[in-house]
Image (cartoon, rainbow, N blue to C red; front, side, top):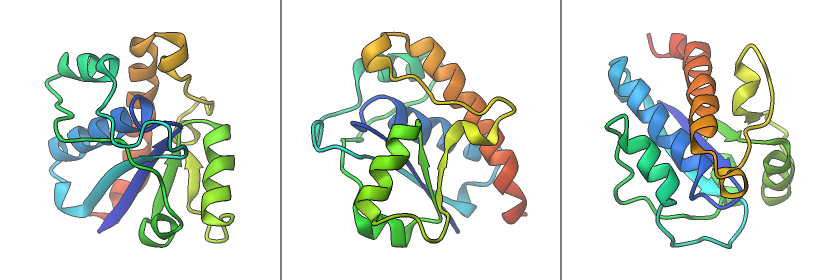
Length: 153
């Protein structure tokens, strides 16, 4: 079982989008049995809040539901539990290391580091552009799945 935790600042926009896009890709690939996928925040600001309506609406276009997801904060225990802790931007990685007490096992990566064009994923909370965020997350999730799916087969 490969355990993945997607992480962003508040766990209401990017990381839940990545969580549910990845779950959808894994399901469509017939690999659901190989993965445990979740998401969390580096901050406490949105704890307990549902997924942002912009993310919910964007994923709804593709028949993907975020029902039952509420923001939670990453813990040091998450570092021990998950195989991959996947941030959306470099600032997330810095905050993830602060929470976990660094990254001695090399588990922390940016999602788009698996793509042909490594970069940060802009926060749609500030940009208002959930379309670009979705495109970046889908690109990253597809590249990430391609990178790790061999471990399932």
